[in-house]
Amino acid sequence: MVLSPSEGEKHSTKDVAANEEEGPGIALGRRRSKKIPGIPLMVALDRVRELLEGSPIPFALASAFSSTICKDFGNTGRFRRMIDNIQAVLRKTPLFASLTQQEVQALAARTTRRRLQRGELLFAEGDPCTGLFLVASGKMRIFKLSASGREQVLALEGPGGSFAELPVFDGGNYPAAAAASEDTELLFISRKDFQNFCREHPDVALKVIAVVGGRLRRLVGIIEELSFTTVRQRLIALLLQLADAEGTRAKDGIHLELKKSHQDFAAELGTVRELVSRNLSRLQAEGYLEVEGRKLVVKDVLGLKRELPAAE
Image (cartoon, rainbow, N blue to C red; front, side, top):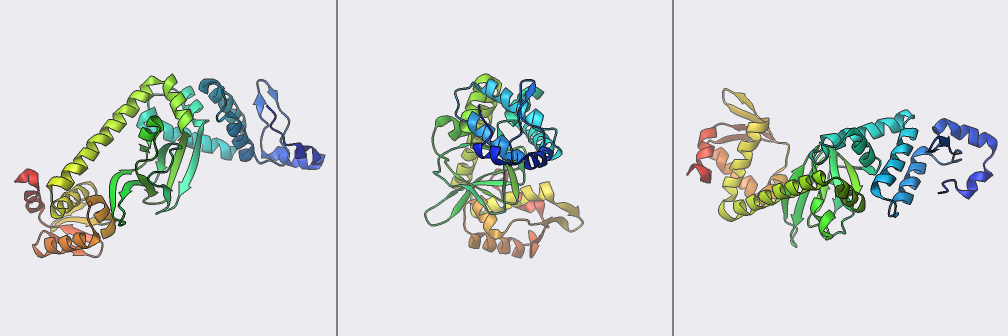
């Protein structure tokens, strides 16, 4: 495997010496290869990964080779921090919580990072599936979009969450779209790498089945809510959930700062913004809530609970 570009030989000895400061060379066994003149450390590693991607080399062997490279390159502070960060995220992800240190290192060697800004689309519904995504920080919104532009949120994935497991295995396209609800950092594992990893670690495949099963239950819950409850009831349930999770209790009720817009609420509730605004106004007029901008006070929790179907 030749990593040095032919144009590298044209660099002067002085240029090569300057590049020595970028970090150690690629260790092949116990021997250290020559430096790659003019090629930054991260670019060199990307070339190695490209060469391994799609090769007939077994996953374990290819991962071990990548891990050796990562370990060697890891002597540089910036790269070492990046690898440590990836491994930490993998350990916190339920899918990979039971892996050994060596297995985490092998998987991290085949993992790449991607950053998204708030509102940025990662993929659209129907796009070809390229692999599995893990949320390192921030929050991702998984949603369906109607022909008229109406959005229905299916899931919100925060740190430690994963998504796109199903199309990784069934060979289909992404069944829904994904966008960043806030500035987000993701980890990505290609479809082929993840499939090979699951073949060697059946316990991970079983966890994938559990995750997909949980998603199916949530989707059944969404269908039930949309079919059998009103927008008012769904809004009340969501407000009570937010009040319980994020609210601050005071003498006049539970104080809550709304971090989402009315449009965001509408997307989660399967309705339109106007109906969210109208129902919030009615609940305030009836004395259940007090709303001022993004600040909200739940004044009658018991009264709101009586409005829900389960309390009837």
